[in-house]
Length: 222
Length: 263
Ligand SMILES: C[S@@+](CC[C@H](N)C(=O)[O-])C[C@H]1O[C@@H](n2cnc3c(N)ncnc32)[C@H](O)[C@@H]1O
Image 1 (cartoon, rainbow over the protein chains, first blue to last red):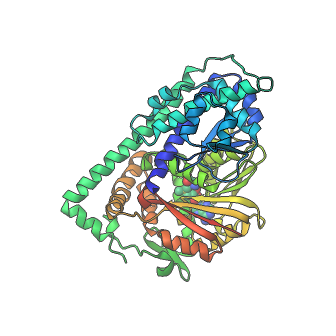
Image 2: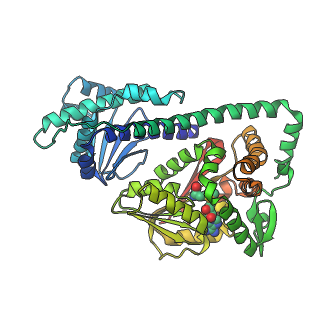
Image 3: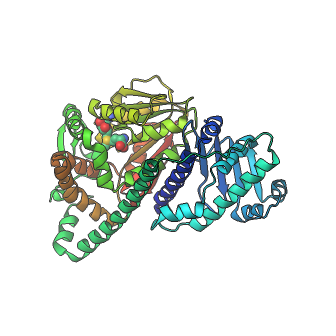
């Protein structure tokens, strides 16, 4: 599965950019982030062979596939999260072994609250940025992500006195959006270039006997 | 074509003995290699980031992110980004270890360090980063200092790799891990050929065009060929004392990430 490591990183990078772009839109995120700084939430979906770990610092939320120690771990599968979407109780799902949380529940709640605040339209955002990147589990991802926001909403409703919901929004500067989409576009363009370059090289190497011979020469070291 | 010059597969056995070592495909006195490598990186420092993106189509960024994820870094950790150059890994580590953590960007080359320092400062990353000019072979840190050490695209430039690995082992805390990201041996022959073609024909030309320095990029291409393959590097790490050593091939083995623990 080694070939999937980089597409996976690409996807995490895009998710991270989408989240931070949304954070930049919302003036209230700063406080929420500061509260979360240094806290990690790891989400393990049985359908994915890598974890998704959220790490907050004062200004950003980082999305990685770091495994291991985490302040809070959430284990679930997509079906369970869909049930959550149908307003089933969290505790009920935990009882049925469909969802499990280990560690500091407060951390999960705070992340949930942060996501509730910044409300991202994942389907649209992912579609915008992913373009031609292999459609690796994207559909499941977006299902999962939308379910996460339901989860967030429920958590906040359940504990409204503790979790202040800020609704004030400030416009992000157009520069930030531009900068962000250029970066993502450039990266996917480079990946495409690489692919066509490799195809071209493959063609050249298999059709040009002189080149093939020269390259063979460089390889005969054993 | 320079790739037809012969490169021994296992530089460790073939010539690292005695007082000579490799500088690309050339055999040079060990003491000469350092200054020659220094020359290369002084020369490329200013344009290093741009060239990296051009040469790898941006893929080096994903490889570096993968390395950081594989390190299992946590807020509060102390990290050494060795041969860290212009600080790509340091930047992300700094965000992940947060206020309580610390990242040391160490490199033998002052030009690379300066470019790195300016870049990270421009990104507002100042709080938890220190800069140290150091040779990987003689790390100027106490024993058992770091939770994580990374060396990305750096080890192949080091004169005495074994010595450097031992030095890294010494400064890691028990339970700490080393991650070596480096060019390696492609898993598929066609990819190997394509890589060689790219390294020896395209890379120096891009070097010439963009920074008017084809020689430095010729050295980089040659040093990629001379670096030990996956199994050899794994054995070298084990020899230096690392345990549970594993590697992951990225982009079909063109690049590999080795990981080992100190217990
Ligand atoms: C190709 S650059 C990699 C920089 C950075 N890690 C990255 O991945 O972008 C290699 C770096 O290794 C450094 N280097 C070479 N020999 C070294 C040594 N003996 N000790 C420490 N750094 C060294 C060079 O100065 C250069 O900055």
